Length: 359
Ligand code: FAD
Ligand code: EPU
Image (tube, rainbow, N blue to C red; front, side, top):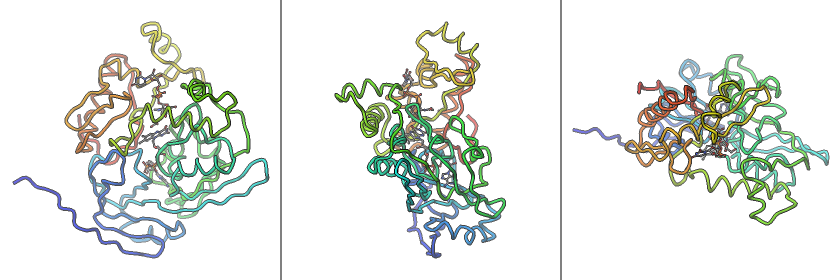
C-alpha cells in the first residue's frame, strides 16, 4: 500500500521568547517548496533567549540549522535536529544628519527594510531591492544584485557564537565578505546572526550602469534619477526576468557565476563571442552561468516536477511536488552538462541541507 504522510496538527510550546514545535513541517518555510520536516523547530522571538534554548542537551548535542525565509536552501531530506527560525523584529537608528547607523534584528524581512530605508531618505540599498529573505541571512552569502553587494553597507554583524557560547560582534573585515561568500559560509553552524548594523548615507553616487538599469530608467522617462527611481527600475527588471516564488517554487539563482582565470575566459570568449564576461578586480573573470546552461540546452528542461525555468536558465523550479532529491539530481545533470561542454565546474549557490543523494 503506498504510504502517505499524514500531517498532524503541530503542537506549539511557548517557552517565553521562543516557541517549540516538534516534528514540524518545513514545506512553507522554503521557497523551493520542498516537503521536509524538522525533528524540532524553535521560532526565536527574543535573541536573548538563545542561550537558554541552546543549553538543552538535546539541542546542544544535536544538529542545528538556522533558517530565515528559506529562500536560499535546498532540503534533500528531513532535518534530524533543531531548526532555529529567526523571527526577531526591531530597527534602531542613530542619525547624524548626513548618514545613519541602523541596527536591524535578524528576523526582519530584507525587502521591507530596503523600502523603509528609501522611505526615510537613505541611499545605498536601492539596487538590492526585492531580494527575498531576512536581514540576518543577508551577510551569510553577502547578497548582491545589479552591481552592488550588501557588504559595502555593513559595519558589523552581531551573532551568538555557539562554539564560544558568547555574543560576538564581527566587524566587516572579520566577516571576510566576497562574491556570494563570507566567514559565515566558511564556518557553518558556528554563528547565529542576531542583528546586522548598517551605515547608510543620505546621498551617494548611484549605480545605474549595470544590467539594463540605465535603459529601464530611460523607458520610465527618468533622466535625473533618485535612489527610489533606481529601486523602481530594478523592481521592473527583476519582475520581468525572475520567476516569482509565490507563483512557482524556486531559490533564485541555483548556481554561482563561475570566476575563472583570464586565460580560460579569453579562450572561451574567442570560441563563443556572445558569452557574457565580467572582468574582476583581481584580474580573473566572472562568466555567466545562465549563458553556459542555456547553451547546453537546459533552459526550460523538465524532469517530472523538477525543472529549469524557461524564463531564466540559472533558476531551478519546482513545478508542483518535486522532492529535494529530484531537484538535486537535475542540478547534477546541469553541472555535468556544463562541465562536459565547457570544462567548468558550476557550484550551487543555495545551501544544500542533508546528505546529497547520488545522481
Ligand atoms: P535562508 O534561505 O533561510 O538561509 C540561507 C543560509 O543562511 C542558510 O545556510 C542558513 O543557515 C543561513 N542563515 C539564515 N539566517 C541566518 C542567521 N540569522 N544566522 C546564521 N545563519 C543564517 N540572493 C542574492 O544574493 N541576490 C539576488 O538577487 C537574489 N535573488 C533571489 C531571487 C529569488 C526569487 C529567490 C528565491 C532568492 C534570491 N536570492 C538572491 C537568494 C536569497 O534571497 C538570499 O540568499 C537571502 O539572503 C536568503 O535569506 P533567507 O532568510 O531566506 O535565508
Ligand atoms: N542569460 C542567458 N540566459 C538566461 C538568462 C540570462 O544567457 O536564461 C545571460 C544574458 O546574457 C544576461 C546574463 O546572462 O545578460 C546575465 O543575466 P542576469 O542579469 O539575469 O544576471 P545573472 O548573472 O544571471 C546575477 C545574480 C542574481 C542577481 C542578478 C542581477 C548570481 C549567481 N546571480 O544573475 O542573483 O539578481 O545577477 O544582478 O550571481 C541570486 O543570487 O539568487 C540572484 C538572483
